[in-house]
Length: 440
Image (cartoon, rainbow, N blue to C red; front, side, top):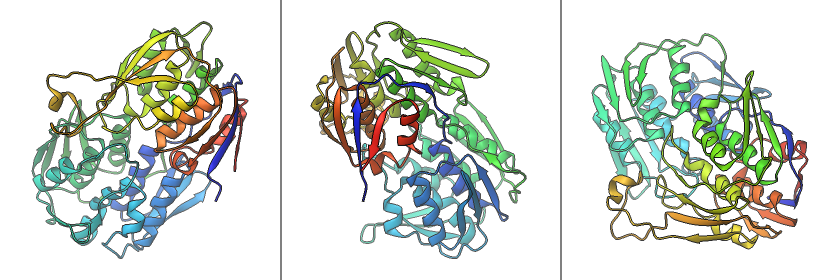
């Protein structure tokens, strides 16, 4: 199986990237489509490994879901016949946990195993389980089988306040509430653009969902009616990856299909670093006409600096002048790329950050007796050189490929199927920017 990139770095990458649809939006829309009684058409769906795995999983349950044209997916829930999610398929993709919503409405009960996905932390689902229970759902975990055994009354009701915002939890509880009894109120919800997109999709099909900041109110409806194909929003994580890639190689990039507000915090940090940014007529230009300056960041949920962006930011800071720091507050295992970047000559060290209130400061479930490494210090600029790298998680994979393209000489990046879970035609897009990369 081809699972490595051979990269010859050191070239300035320049040009324009046509962004794909957002992975984190497409996956949820596909699952939400199973709530409909009629067929649903989704446009601008990225043809990536995670989407392919989800479509295969849905077909294993009896429903129809497949690409019917380039980047166009059709979902038909009518043939859905199984309420038990296959353990092997679910282990490959974390979003499988969200199948609770359509399966419960179809069957009244279902069996879903612990979700898979990147190992960037414990990613506890207790907030999600507590939210489901608050809406009247019965949840039992069978430790012998590894399955959640769940049942739901015909119409859920109630309210729930997340102890800490949860992206996946917010979306799942919204789906569970669409056909609920009366008004269901969710508080302290996550506010990512992909959530707004899901709400737009459902409201355009007859749902009654109102979101104001971290509060979401859902009036239950009897059914959803598909009206017209829905366009998946552009991928902001992909946008950040290619911008970082261009700037780290001292090149430039133009983007036309990204909403600036979706990456506003990233743009602000780039401005602080001295990057040249111009926004006009729906296009954003990124360039670096002078030496970039070191800038510190802390990751927090939207609208803050996204955790998915920080591995790429680390690569960019190896090319910036001075010392910069990254504090990871969302996940407890997001620095898998550090030792890999050091193989290329990066100067990165872990720093012991003293926090007086770690339980509330961090967004993961902080445990007092655990040892955490949540802060790194980066010295720059450094001349990166080639090396052999191994991908541990999706976003780390993108950062390693970026570093290899910025480095001089040849690099091998292994385990790139993990990267390709979230990036459509990565090799083709890099080549269009002038990068020398091939898959072996």
